[in-house]
Length: 217
Image 1 (tube, rainbow, N blue to C red):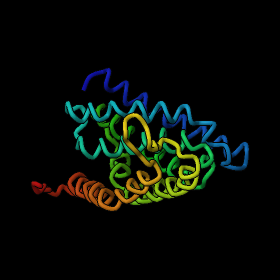
Image 2 (cartoon, rainbow, N blue to C red):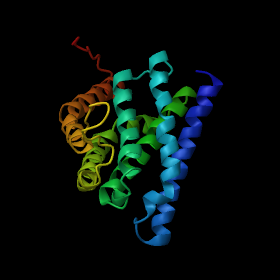
Image 3 (tube, helix red, strand yellow):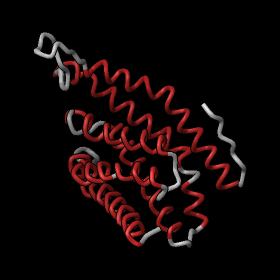
Image 4 (cartoon, rainbow, N blue to C red):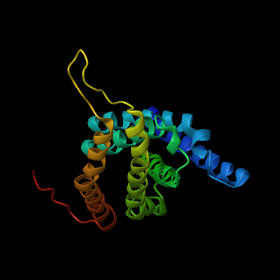
């Protein structure tokens, strides 16, 4: 890896750690998580949008992870940040928002610390263990947080008609964001198990040295 790539991974680790500290400080000072999302939203939007580069890194081999898996994860988070919590401000104080925020933060701190130490060829076993064990709990909890947040947004989307296109219009095209969100929620049913079992296979390969033979579709 190049020095630039190492600096980038270290930068992202530092920034997610700063975000975690900001979240903890807010809660300790205010005694509540109400308003927490608003206080860290600019930083969160930047990090998650910047994560689009990870798809490119996977494609060119900088990070040896599936392009499809990374693409789905990155795009789903960007969708949650920009098209759910940013666009529908009434849900920003929902418990479910805090759930996926905490999960994302712990996940990213663990992941970027893994990448950084791995690039330095000095990977502590605990970091490696955490990278391939924390997700067992964090992944499903994060998915629940995301789904509950989308569910909480549905009444506001239906009432406001945000992002929806109604007929008649000059393009003769209609789009209902409310039903689109229902489709997004339903898509978690086939996608989550695939991504989760992919991570479990990677875990067996890395921690237990199993040779995993991927079947062709």
